Length: 635
View 1 (tube, rainbow, N blue to C red):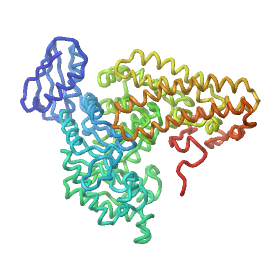
View 2: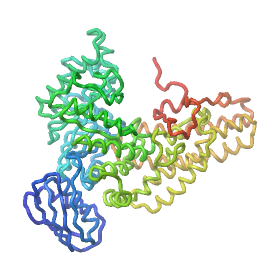
View 3: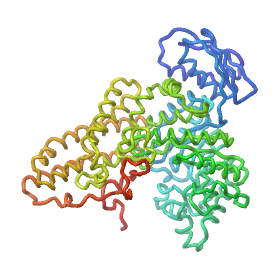
């Protein structure tokens, strides 16, 4: 297939190279030529196409909408049709976390940009705490895969080919522990995670951050962070200046950072925590529907407030929060979540539910800027491609009032080159307690049952009545069929196939070992040590190799060492378990004290059943999963 662009020369120049790139992404052996007549229209929020035979007439002003329609035409080139659409939001974005151990490779980001273009999205946020180059600060992003200025400039140019705005999403107060760990940063530090507000040296540093990014990015928007500075003013600030309420410190600090943004040519936005919690004195989402905001501290005119909410499954919460935000700022931006950070596996049910409710509320509240976040909490264990179902749903809802199953399946195939039904199998990995699509409490057993020590069984109390072996073996059988037929995502599904196989044998391993030990069933212990554990190790090795391959397709090498250590730790502890059983079976030791420890509930469910929709069985911190002892202890 080939294309010919005709019409307005300026329009052609704005989309020509991006069109060629998207065309090259289509695996088509057709020899026909599609002719596109491009016409500019005055309404920037409307786009339309009429296709008859091999001729297409596209009317648009915004390149992002053109690419969305262009992609649709390429995938439906054998049909004649007319369609017109308006997005509900002027700004439609995606934020990729490039700081939780994994800094996505420029190649991976470019592939994501192509998919965003196909979806009609027009913003890409890169969340970079310290993973970008800042001249004069060699330890900023050291050993973390920081992006060079050239890499960011090249990515900015690439985004521009598709009408997508590249937006740095940085931190100018908290969430900087990876940089503040270094001795050279000591003068900048309040606490281990937070900059020392009010310090001239800190503001020189922040100016350097802003100037470095300003030289790389063409757009004016920047996200300056400022969320979750819970210990602000309680470290070096307290020692040097005495106690001052954190709300006063952050207010003065924000004013100074905004001044620096103006001086360096940025239009800033920030997470809205400060403006909500300081006014209510309560939790971020604990806002009354009847809250009187007339005397609340308002944000400056040139500051956008980002309301972030990935959690709530009640529409009234979104409505209340949007009402409050609209009373505090003339520019409110909503940030939803893709729930790729549930542990090792995505939680599509939670993401779909929250996106539907949140974007409905945003439409009704007149919000014009929205973006979806793809965080990589606790080590970026979930492969990047697992974001696509949630991202497709979020982008679909930017153009449709609700999800339409048949149309969504086709949309996913056109934009992602995958089968949505296949991807949705991944939701089952963490749906052990609640069922696929219903895991609204974000349980994540696929993570803690993989990492938990079989000799300790810290989570065994909660799965003692479940048939985990049958559950995960059934899932593995389904995933095996998928990875053998999937062309583009074969390694992704193979990885989750082997994870399911490992879980089918390891999830209840601790229960089987302890039951056999308590009953002195030596034959079962012998079978576990000689047959079961070797099978787990064999499948774990396959899984580990695939995860490494996926990592290096997704990200820079920095940070993989931690995931390598985690998966290697599972292997080492299984072998240690095997040796302990052998020592006991041979009479070398008379007892296994760790198996005599009573298995206690990890969570206090207050008598509720684990399958109860309100029961939360989630632990995403690896260091808490692996042992009852502290991995990080006071020296």
